[in-house]
Length: 126
Image (cartoon, rainbow, N blue to C red; front, side, top):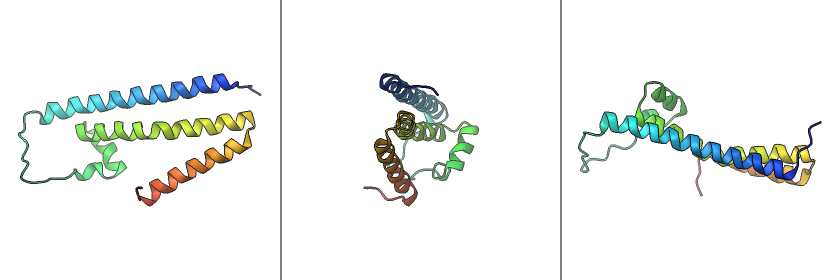
């Protein structure tokens, strides 16, 4: 069995956070370039509120928009990845606590993940 030290786990968690942030910011930047290329010349009409496009309200619409290179969908995907980065950190922490056999922190981490997922599924904020 592989033996992890606390320092190894901290380094792994730091790399996960760093990589998630860099990847998501890069995706948002690329989406911004696509958006400016397609819509940079349009003049904003502030008299009428258009809201957000329908395709960014659902994940399948975001994926479809990314595949068709729509800038707003690419930006939305980058934001979703940025939000999911700390959630991934909690999941990696849970696995680290399981390997260390620190079951109290496994329980706490699982409770945090449960709260996050229930909040995401219920759609209530605050």
